[in-house]
Amino acid sequence: RSQRGTTPKRHTIEMVNFEFRPAVVRVAAGDTVIWINRDVVPHTATAQGAWETGNIGSQETGRVIVKGSGEQNYVCEYHSSMRGKLIVK
Image (tube, rainbow, N blue to C red; front, side):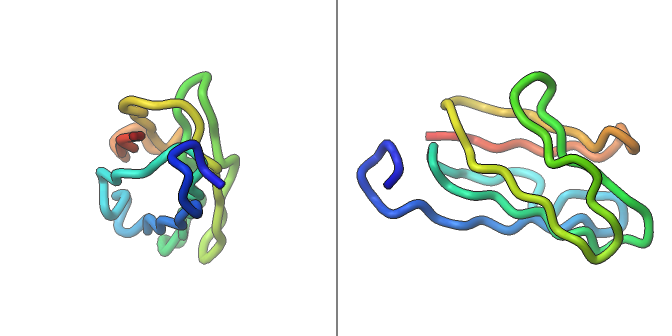
């Protein structure tokens, strides 16, 4: 159970054409976020010092269980133009 007393949810973000889609996702602490890499090159999703997925190869997935609250900005460590945000309630 998450901190809000409900069953945690799963959220999916695709990595497509060197973008996170959707780029902004509203989540709750305890939810799981799954990234699916649809590009032919590897990516990451990294919130400096907070969490990271590690390397996600083409057609592979990475996941993080959300902790904390507030806005968590993240990038791909390999492609700095790829930016996303989790808004954690």
